[in-house]
Image (cartoon, rainbow, N blue to C red; front, side):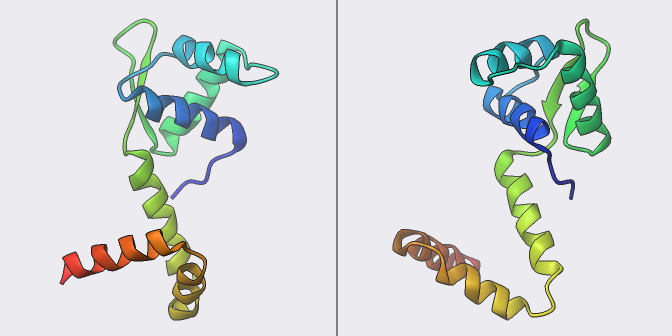
Length: 119
């Protein structure tokens, strides 16, 4: 699973928050108000192309300007990162124990409910 740099993450947040397809101009419009030094449209097109190569966005090049949409939801992406991190561990039990030890009571209750639903 591809990890994201700071600008890639900001762009993906815009794509995910938009909920549909977006253009680089629409991404720029959002980032213009959120960043001290907003990126140029050409930079955003490069980032969106890189995200497409990483498999995080699909591009519709039949339209002008090109439109981009997320391949998976933010939650699916983060869950996949968690699975990958767990898979890289030599001691999955220890990693899970450390993770569970750091969650709040509400999160622990949610985990218990989710695990009960599996079985």
